[in-house]
Amino acid sequence: MSKYRGDFPAIRALMRDGEIHRDLYIDQELFQLEMEYVFGASWVYVGHESQIPNPGDYYTTTVGLQPVVMVRDADGAIHVHYNRCPHKGTKIANEICGNAGKFFRCPYHAWVFRFDGKFLGMPLRGGYEDVGFERSEAALGLTPVGGSHNYRGFVFARLSPLGPGFEEFFGESLSSIDNMVDRSPAGRLEVAGPPLRYMHNCNWKMLVENQTDTCHPMVAHESSAGTAIEVWKRAPEGTPKPMAVEIFAPFMSPYEFFEKMGIRIWENGHAHTGVAASIHSNYSAIPGYFEKMAAAYGETRARAILDENRHNTVYFPNTMIKGPIQLLRLFKPISAGKTLVESWTYRLVDAPDLLLERTQMYNRLINAPTSVVGHDDCEVYERAQEGLHTDGNPWVNLQRLYREEEAEERNVVTNGTNEWPMRNQFRAWLKFMAVGMGA
Amino acid sequence: MSTPTNQELIDFVYREARLIDQQRFDEWLGLFAEDARYWMPLEWEQTDPTLVGSLLYEDKMLLGIRVERLKGRRTYSQKPKSRCHHVLQAPQIESRDEAANCYVLWTPQHYVETRVDEQTLYASWATHTLAIEDGALKIKLKRVDLVNCDAAFGNIQLFM
Image (tube, rainbow over all chains, first blue to last red; front, side, top):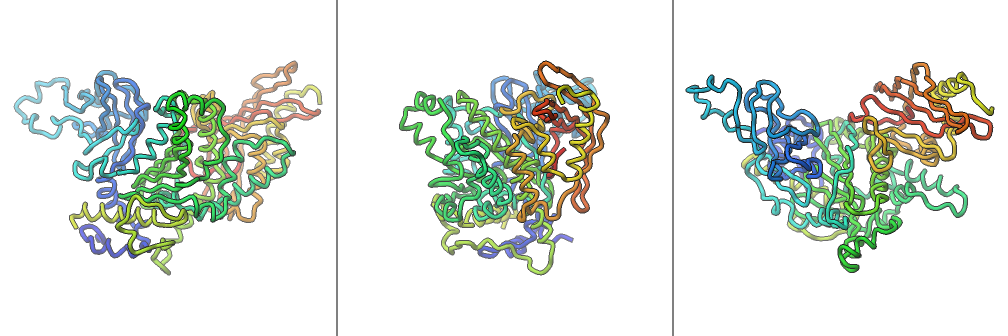
């Protein structure tokens, strides 16, 4: 029996001011609906242009639950299509990264398609004369997603042909991508190898919420970051501080540090932590880097780019980027209780390699399935996913620093421990559900 | 010990796995040279541990943090604790260079990690690069290549 499909008032009732009903995390029907309406109308990150540098290069992934293929055309344009042959459904591209040659050729019956999706032909074409093929779905070729947009190398797609435009969806939040890309003296990023892939038995929204949760590091990560600090204290006097300790130690910063670091709220669920400063602010300077930046941008502009130390920028619904260390995490929903986290790293073109070394170390230490920080995060999410199945209390509390007026505000800065960004995500969620359900 | 016999090298690899399985992590850490690395690549036949991602690439200090963390009162992901189990195929001597004090062994292994009702099997090849230091064999590099290094994994909390 359907509990939520076609019943927006029932969904609206799952959200109070600062309280969220557990069904948003555990109900599989709601999960299906949010895949259709939230992931359908949002601009979701697909991949980076550097993954497909040459004509015919493709990358296969998912947007929400939908398999898609991102491909580079002969003229350099990037197209995003649903990944199925219009004939019988066979995935047209099957490697994660590959090259299709001059056109897509289905491995089943050799139907061929241009990279823009247009149908080119099939063997024994005579068999399709006078059968009405030209009026069939198949004759339309590969189905493109509703829209795709390449922003400074980052390719996003909107599955639905209807929905907000790219700029309208992101607003001022694109400044975080700008800052990450501007950190390259050449103004360009390249994907640096495969992502770490970490499976979590919890709802995707728990992971997204946690990206702006600044009241958990000193608690959940005491066992890892706290131990790192203790071990480091025992090092002989004069030992240079290792990069790993620089990465771990700020997780144990006191609440006051996180309060002061600030959070900026944008529309459509986007926000970032680390306005005034962040856990990335006090990393050692990399020799030769500033000189390259100053040569490329001039000293004043270079300093402005590098003084921006945004911590986590959340792009609703399921992406987070860390500008200062060139990292992107994609929270790929699989079911109400299962999420695949991909953590991607990027090389700043024309910058010293030591920056990429730090990026890779950060990713290993914090985001890997073997990471001691990741272990405790995963543990608390999975315990929450199990705990929410109890019938004692169906509500999740997100009231920290709640104000009634906040719902109408955007592009503002608030206390760094505010749970406003999480409430902001759920307001965006509800908005897209309402639009999708015609409410 | 000045020059290890092949049997001594092989015994060392078996003993290392045994110390992990018996959770004698302080003794296990003692098997590593001060400048040792423990590497679990992310890519098939990966050659670069620093500019390409890896599951693990840790020095002795970071391994020490892991060992210490496992004993911690607030190590939530180890409440309850994990256990693990190695099955090693006979370690093979890949190379021995007495002049360079460098001995390399190659060992296919199955590793099982459990936590309460969950039990996960990982298949991998362990490559040990060993050297004699202060009269004892030490690990300079332990490299563990998972057969499915590029797969999505849940928590891997102990040592393969």
